[in-house]
Length: 624
Image (cartoon, rainbow, N blue to C red):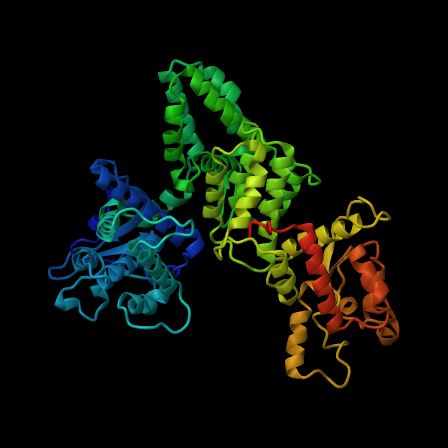
């Protein structure tokens, strides 16, 4: 087989036609995991091109590696396209075509016809013989995607319904329009250069600065065997393995005591714990590679992609490891932060740091906050305890309030990098206060910190159950329970029972026993369906109730005829009374002896919103 590094110009120039076999899976890439990171990488290279052009150092423009594709070429036929069957890599090949076409469309609409034509050569086989045929496209996708692909690549007006290909094309088109036109990003930064230079940079990047390893299996007896071997056999090399090799080769060059380095700084990284794969979003990665990515993001104050970890480390470490002494200082600082990271899971949940890790990083699954969390806990930074608490409490409140109001978190990676940039050079003795002020200053939709007024006004109307994961709602309700306990001396700081479950006070199946004649009108019934899933109708119980108990009428007399569930003659109120060790339930039981109504839910939703605002204090009103 042949394997070569190819640019998009190399892959799509001439008359190639890459076809995805119809049996392959449909297009599945999405904005969060693939489109946005790819666009960020493209713009990073394009911006380097602009800077190099200004400095007349074009040779310094980096390439970006997109991964590998595996294909099998068909025998050539005179007058036909050059046909290739794509065996592996269909997602990146399809995405690359959508990206090229979206940018080409923006170029054309903004009057950059020469650049638009150069990209069009990489999208279409324009010979008259291929007009109206699938061969007019450089790539033809899998069966499920062909109609949408032909529609969006042919610019055939609006598309009815949803499709990933259409969404991807629209995403790239929007981002290209914004960057080329010079519109400021979410941080207010305006792209460098004028529009002509940005168009030139983006065109060069897409045609020449992206790299794909193209593996041609043509003529091999068993292409499938090659494919399986490439994808399924052997143990993958970690980024940490590449970094270790670089560090120790550097040490030998500096004539350092590399054996001592191995024992003191690196041996632990080779342990099972560090090399074990853990879930990170939709991906599984080793702990050591995840730590290094977070650590580099923290130190560089820029978003470091997983595939960039080795190169970013080498570029960052080289000037800090000029001699044996400076190298020892560098590795010592790395080791201290690694030990801090390793202790995250053992943090006491009664502490601010332990609560933050449990609630924000684990339950809310916002691992993007880890670099800032590590910065605040790092022994190397020496942040005072009071400032650490202030900073972590502010970030946690920002996360919880935005989660409850169902505000987007798609920009959180960039926002945490912006926060790190703000902290760069900040006196650790005031870092927590600076974090709170910075969060309070935000006004963009993707970044602002909801105020008490907004939380108290909007939260009671929000349908939370089924829209927010139960584990996250459990964290909210447990925190409110602990807060209510702290307000009364008779409860004190007693810990919560383990294994608490979320329970609807008015059951979701309310139509069975909670809708006596005359029945609610359809519009009122729809409104009640919303109420039962708001914060005011949710509580905690120490044992999950089965359907027959959960759906019981509120009072014992109304439940007298019911035998199912093992609690004959007991209503929902009596059943909840078994769990009245919880303050959340005590007020409900004591204050509502005869009924639990829609208006009761509305009132409790307002009370819960006020309590949540107290548990997670909001932004500085003076700053806002």
